[in-house]
Image 1 (tube, helix red, strand yellow):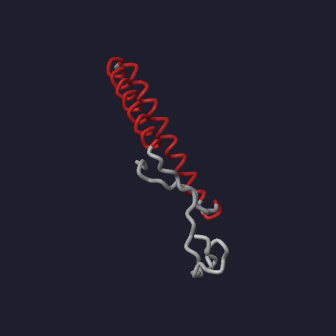
Image 2: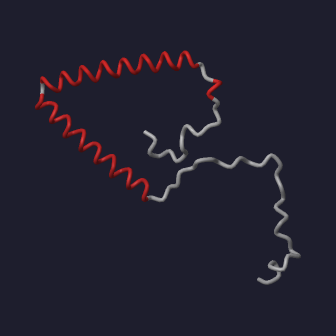
Image 3: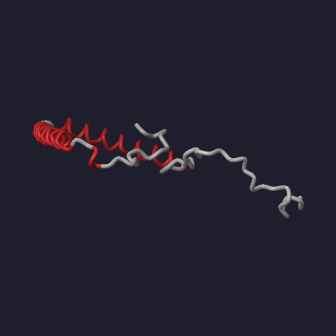
Length: 108
């Protein structure tokens, strides 16, 4: 999903005190109970259909191998991750530190 995205997500300056913790905890509880229920149903299905489970497991392993190969190719392309971008300066300068009177300016 984020293979072409070079910036690291979730590296913001958000403070935990700004969140609505009751809503977050309620959502976490609903998601966890749903997750546990779905996994229990999946385990029952796997026990009753072992051939279908073996086929699904084989497809899952092949899919994960493809993702791992694509991840290695992506990292070998030399695209660095960007952890923090530098902001544009509030005051634009004329970059006068390259002066004509500087000794290195006359040497070349």
